[in-house]
Amino acid sequence: MPSFTQTEKQGGQTEIRQVTVCSQPKWIENQTHWKDLNTVVMVDRTRQYIGEEQNSKLFYISSLVNPTP
Image 1: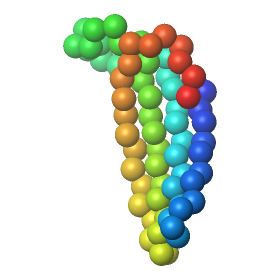
Image 2: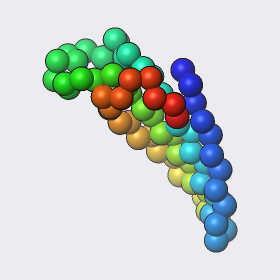
Image 3: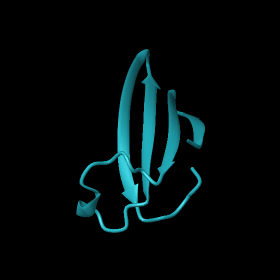
Image 4: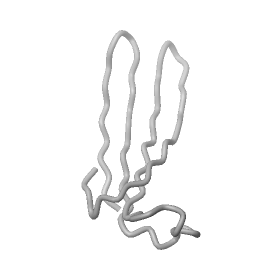
C-alpha cells in the first residue's frame, strides 16, 4: 500500500505523520453501508513534546479511486 511520511518540528514539539492509502478495500464487511467506498486512509500520528510521546491512528473513508498519499 502506498504511504507518505512527514515530520514537522515547531516550538519544541515534533510531529510525525505517516499516511497510508488502501484502494479497493474488499476486506471491509458491510460495505453497503458506505456508498461508493473506494479507499480507506490511515493517518498514524506521533507527537513528541518535552520527553512525552503521544500516538494516535485516524481512519478515513473516501469515494476517490486510487488516490496518492
